[in-house]
Amino acid sequence: MTLTESPSLPDPALGTHPNLRPADAATLILVDRSQRAPRLLLGRRNARQAFMPGMFVFPGGRVEAQDRQMPVFGMLDEVTERRLNARVSRPSASRPRALALAAIRETCEETGLLLGTTDAGAPETAAAGWSAFVEAGVYPDLEALTFVARAVTPPRHSRRFDTRFFMAEASNIAHRLEGVVGPDSEFVDVQWMTFAQARKAEVPAITLAVIEEIETRLERGNKPWLPVPYFFSRNGRFHRETLD
Image (cartoon, rainbow, N blue to C red; front, side, top):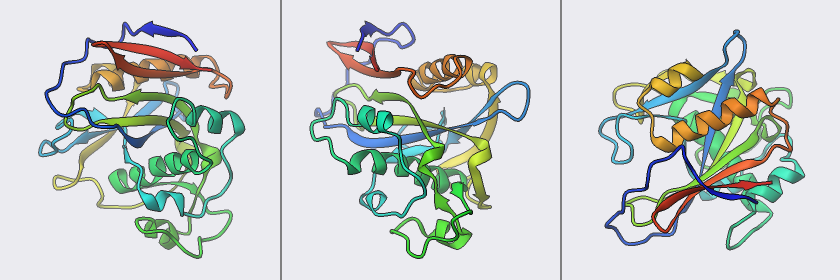
């Protein structure tokens, strides 16, 4: 593992809140490579949201208890499970699975896109928050995901997340729900953007850093053994460590 200061991020602002333990969270980066220039799906957060209002971000959110209970199709590979359990206080067999499922569930809730497969029929049961998958006959597919980045919110901010970024091809979208995005929703708009467009969009610094990492990863063939960047703050400076 290599520790360096990250040139892609500004110095983290010193917060004034109690130093909360970061909550486990997960994000999904959908990539559409059906055209010459790859495109990424980003959503604009409602301006009324307390966290990153009005910014373009990847869909995602905190891990919920039910994410450990949802039936799935496929498994995460051994390297991914090891990396997802790295640098945590209590590694477990269930944590990687829950993180991956949180990314899929949150993407459904925020964009109406269900990532998975219909080849295995409909799940017979669903954990709370997963009913859309049963109704659409879609199993969430863990094998469609690649773990590509991790970032922790700096200390003393009002909300802190230990976020794992997953990537998946848009071809793995099995179903679309209508009416999820709108003026009263968490996302008021979603757009497929090229890398050039995403860099110019109103995105948080960490999202921009991950966009740059994703472009490099795709150029290198998105091989599963490529290292995963890990962004965090230490002594008032952002750092980038690689999980090999």
